[in-house]
Length: 316
Ligand code: BG6
Image: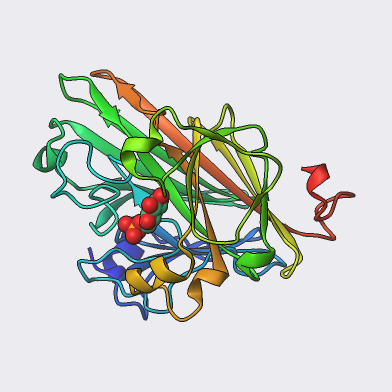
């Protein structure tokens, strides 16, 4: 559907507008008293989130372009129906199939100051070794926080095993001064270790997560809430979740960023990924006729507005 057709079918004056972005493809622009958000139809990928009175929460690569076969780096890519490498077929792309495919808008809604767009993936999963009848729906809701609900529906006749992530790239002042609270005492799989050594060699997080080199970890988390403390930007970003028992923390640092080719000069210093996931041991089985919901809620507050604790990690 073209942007004008989307606008005619689903636009809502002052709240939801569809247009062609300078990145080269159609986007939905959400706006309310709570802020603004921009979502590309490609990948149903949130590209921008600015809470009212705040600044941009998400990092987007300066090389980002829509309409190419390559997934856009930044914002919130949807990794589905697998996270990381395909479970059995190494020829399949990392992080699933829907990051660069076009999603369909099926519904928009405005309730008070909350604005929602519902996307469904048009992908036929049977092409990638998954049984037919599997589908994904993503609700992006701009309210007091930004909420993403990724619902997987299994309308087929076989149970499926699912891994996935809402791969949030959070913009930070400088990765060297950022810390992540909320993961103390949690075991994690260190993805930088050779795959053969990871099993059974779980590490334990002590205190805050700090960044002094590449970090690529899958934390096993009961009911994860991770908080990014950013003294340079003077804010904390809370990522609260539902339907997830794993959080991925990732920053590529210098060499991997150079290999990736779309991070930009020193770009790795400007983001940290806190990914709301079903990954590692947190594999979900979805029976025929059943559904699974994965939710990420992102809330940003300046130090002054975030309560008595401000950026004090003890307060998180
Ligand atoms: C993270 C993974 O989720 O995504 C990393 O833990 C990976 O291992 C990163 O490098 C980026 O993946 P991609 O496919 O977007 O380059």
